[in-house]
Length: 144
Image 1 (tube, rainbow, N blue to C red):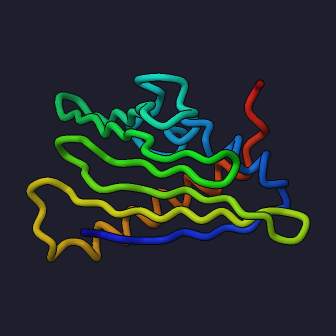
Image 2: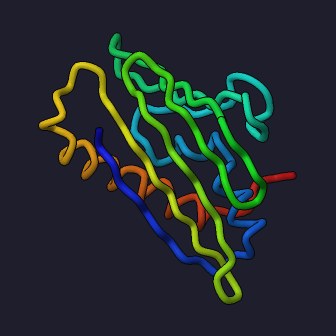
């Protein structure tokens, strides 16, 4: 399984960092050929499902992620339950000084891809999700 952790510090208070981190549709803004939205519920409670849909031409797949734990504004744990992408993610926000630390940990298993490729998957995912995280923390606050 490919594993990685991203950590970012920002000047946002934890509640603002949390609001940006859980603005699910914004996650797709920096991932090519991908849209993200809430497929079940509000995206704010355990049992809700966030769906990333990726596709180019006829090649498409869904990455459904069930929220298995959510404690606002500090923890969201997701279980990836797709046919192509399995694993999980944990998003944490902690107060640090006058701002926040955001920690994004991910474990990915790509169906049909041998574990030999885990370092490549982790490296590519770290790059892509790092761009997403930087974008989310720099973006204007979501509308309430």
